Image (tube, rainbow, N blue to C red; front, side, top):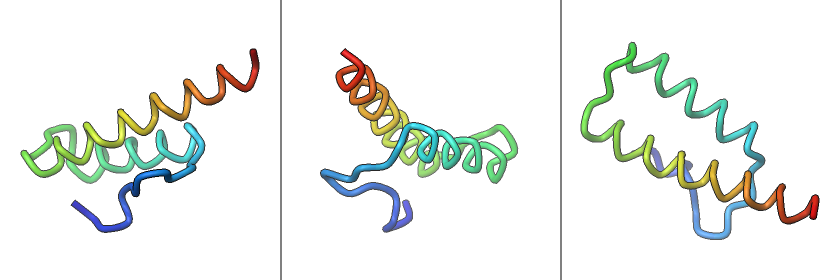
Length: 59
């Protein structure tokens, strides 16, 4: 897992995280290793938090 992945309290937009998810899948050629799967799971959690943050702001 790369050290620049996510840090607690990180504030990245959903679009930025989504772009990193897409790049991960491209690098992996559609088949994730165990390490890449762990990275993907963290990115999805971060993406979901960013989406929730946008929804709360809009409300």
